[in-house]
Amino acid sequence: MAALGLRYNLVKGPAGERAKKRLIEAGLELFGRYSFDGVSTRVLADRADVNLAAIQYYFGSKEGLYQAVASHIVKKVKRWLRPALSEVERKLEEDSLTGEQCFSLLCNLLDRLTTKLLGSPDSKKWVAMVVREQIEPTDAFEILYEGLMKPIDLCLFRLVGGILGLGPQDQETKLRAYAIKGQLIIFHVSRAELKRSLNWQAYRSEELKAIRSIILDHVRAILRMPSIERGHDTIG
Image (cartoon, rainbow, N blue to C red; front, side, top):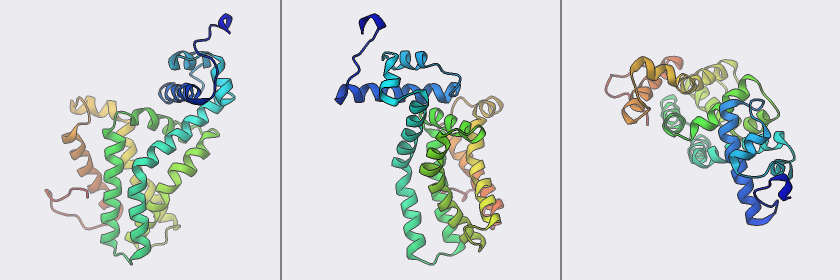
């Protein structure tokens, strides 16, 4: 093994789990930045500080590592999003909600998504990979869709449908829900342009507050909700 320039033995147990974790963290950073095809197995192994054979040993292939990274994203996002989704689901099941009540729940959910998508440094890594899978889907798309996108979509469909008086599977319901999701994504993918145009250094609390206010205005327009006085248009 020394002749192969191995840094660590290929083992199971805690040491093996640490090696797998380093590879997933390396994949999260590099796949998000350079895409699947833009990163070699050697670069992944070097970044994770493991030997080249570790990818094959622990994940079967680079594709296996890529899919493991997708699963890691799902687990990571679910940890902070699950409470918000569960609250929405519980209230939708327990009560017959008015359009305004559905809108309030929608705003709380969007607030959580906005804060995490734009305010967390870690989001830059995984959102890039999720967006790329939308443009050029691979087998990892199904992992992201079933574990992450679909649960969010189902909540959005029910809330938007409740606001519009339409069914959750209605075409207009879904299209308006996706238009709302686009409000969040654009502020992530256009981050560099926005900061350049507005002379912002980062998305800090004041910048996030301004973005959230605009998102709320746009969501009200998308859902044809009555406008509210400026100064009272906070999410949540």
